[in-house]
Length: 444
Ligand code: SUG
Image 1: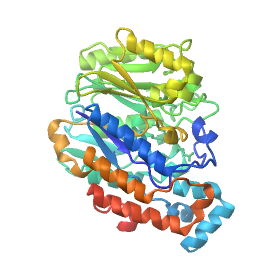
Image 2: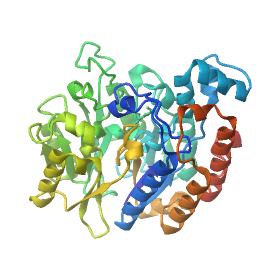
Image 3: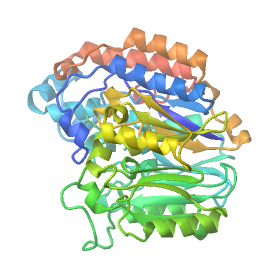
């Protein structure tokens, strides 16, 4: 089975405009955010997946603000003074300390199925996220959370994040897709990078940063013990990175035997054939590729609607469903195309449009909000039961959000010491609800 571990949106969800190269993030800078609505939208998506019969679980938010970030770069003083100084002199640093970006758990880690790894364990490498200051502070907490959830060392292996340096830039599962007949048989793990550090004059984007390197992909292949036939590393088209495709999951999504991608997703026109051959060799079936042409959906529409940042899932009634952002319904061209894919042969069986506007304004669609963990039945019994999503946990989390989250958050509110205290109380209570023990620095 494949579990979707969705990131629960944190109480300080705000729009800092912190992600250069992510068009939605930049466009939303300084806007008022609605943390309560954001968290409830995320929970509603989890409920939909659960109701469709797709295994669902939740990953808690990180404690924010992380004022340690500000102190490490030379700001000082008591908590109250520090908040006031940052608000007056360094609002971007303040927004970074408060960022709820850990909600996008597709960037939390790369996960390899036990059927693919040499030692037969599920492997996790937290992403270093070194490309963005506000995200570079996530790995230590992510690692603690993943170790708390997947604690059984006989079944789960946890690696350190790769060194946080440009040559090893790693953004986790957003650039990783697994193709296989099923979740417990060997498959093909596809890694996609934006540039190669060892080839500085090779193809690379000219405007926006490439966040994932080839060298990071190679390191993860080694760490996870993937066999040569069980993995493929391809380059993303640098041209589309410059159009706002900052992760592969903004232009392609795959699941078991199916790939749904834009024709411009990869650098080389032969890459798709390479992928077909590799899948056929590793998995013994022909890849079902649903490739969208530029003339049907231009890259610009793919970026604004996030059509490829959809989740591709197999429902409890064995139907292939696409969970797409509502923005796809609002873009006439995209909507028409999706409906045609559903109606035509060899497409999806159904499409569900979900309202995630609060996350979308930060550049995170349905696929960004989830980390997929393929597991056997036995492995699924071994992870912390408190994070498994169902009606009961949904109700508890909804009540918790209603009690602790503010409706509207403005950049000014971030300087309020009472808001910091509110975040701590909320997250302390959450660890109790999820039964995870101490995972935040202030609890250790
Ligand atoms: O890293 N946005 C995230 C969005 C991550 C989307 N993830 C995937 N595509 N898998 C990012 O750019 C916005 C923060 C801000 O502007 O406040 C942000 O971090």
